[in-house]
Image 1 (spheres, rainbow, N blue to C red):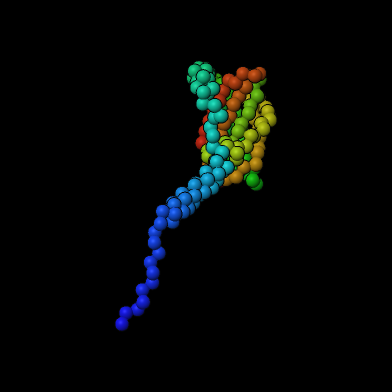
Image 2: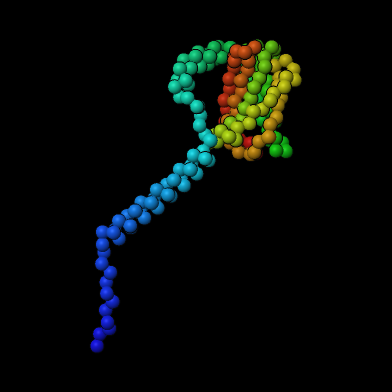
Length: 164
């Protein structure tokens, strides 16, 4: 004797439609969640306008060439002390004399998340000497140092540093 067979459900167009709509709805929902997570957590935009940066490219090249011709020597020491990054800078001309009449700005930029950047306010502690500190975490950073004479930037340095 054989067991009674269950009646098989018929596959209809309506069932296929519901399965397709459910599948694509799930895919769209998951993609929406991932896109929201990606756009809300990524802060690593290098420039807000590539067009404007492209227009300034030639002037940046000329500024770099003028900087190279000055043969200035900028020495810096960056150390992590008690949760703060302490930066000491020394600026000297080609003959080794301290550079006077300059102001300085520094910034620690996180390589992947611009929201974690820290400006380092620098105080002049002598002719061509600056010191500043800002809260920072251990890790890899980009250190930007700009020297100004009045409103004109006369020197820019960009270095990858590791805070330990």
